[in-house]
Image (cartoon, rainbow, N blue to C red; front, side):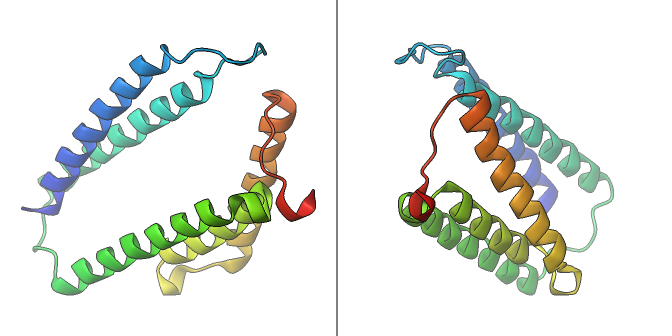
Length: 157
C-alpha cells in the first residue's frame, strides 16, 4: 500500500476518533467547581487532533497526485526506529512525571523528541532547548495560573 493511501486512511480514522472524543467530552462531569470544566482540556485536544488529522489527509491527497517511487526498506527501518524511540520517550515521560515534575520531564521529553524527529543534518540544539523551555514553562504557567490546575512539581517542590 503506498504511503499516500496510508496517510489518507490513518488521517480519516484519527479525524473520526477526534469527533467521537469531542462528543464524549461533553459527558465528563465537573468534579470541582472552578472556571474551567473537566471536559475543557479533552475538547481542546479533540479539536487539535481533528485539525492535525485533516492536514494528514490533505497531505496524503497531495502526495497521491505526485506519487514517486515506493518507499525503500531503509525508509521503513527509519520510520520504525522513530516510532520505537517515541514510545520509549513516552514511557520515560509517564514514569518520571511525578518524581521529576512537569517542567523538567516535559523539557527533557521535548528536546529528545525533537532530536528523534529531526534529520541529523537539520538538528539545531539551541532551537530545541529554547522551544522546549518555552513550551514547558508556558504550559505550566497556563495550567497553574489560568486554569488553576496543579501539575506535578517533582524535585522543585
